[in-house]
Image 1: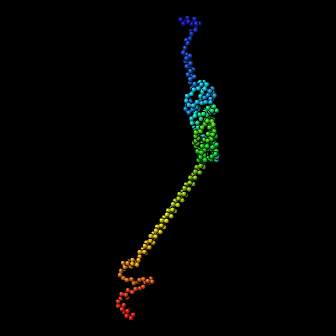
Image 2 (image 1 turned 60 degrees about the vertical axis):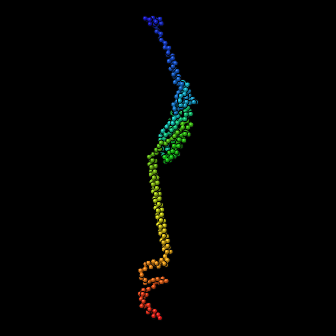
Length: 304
């Protein structure tokens, strides 16, 4: 009944109860939002581009914690880490051969150029700058070499493309860490021609090697024959010299007494029937006549 009387006195409306702590909750929420929007954290390997009401500022944030003006400033984080861009490329060589290749580029965005990159190009700088520059530099370098040179001088071609990319992209703050030509591919006809040429060169090299080996073997055999002939001649010379020395020594050792002694040693007691005279004539000696004593006096008498 008391409620009805109150409704009648207030014109039929019941007064609402006021919540005294509401304003503190609202103030707390606003404070949290302000605090959350008044700082930013830039990840490692990134640069924070500061935007003031959408305008790129002159300064940027490095890695770590930074304060900013809430609701007025925002921070766009851009990576300065090394990034890999791999893509196929097609070009024409100096001898008009179609060259298909796979290339890989390692690059990174310089931190001091990050605000300008964001302002002038945006975050999709790989598609806007890197990809067209890679294709253009690859085509330009490939046109300076024949297809065969592209294979044999791959490292030199890669260095030339890298230098050309540096010249094009360094002004934007993109630094080329490394450029690799992963693979070269040519038409089937060219591959067959290269294979045939390699086979011919290998056969020629094999023939030359066999000829050189034959020459070496022949020279070795000739040297062996010369060495053998020299050895044989030296042996004969030494043998003749030894024989001459022996004959000379024998001649020097043969005296009259030695010869007589040797004759006496070999004499059998029978006088020879033929002996040599002083003039070298052979004289027949009649031993029977010399041995008959009866005939010797008769010959003496007849002489008287």
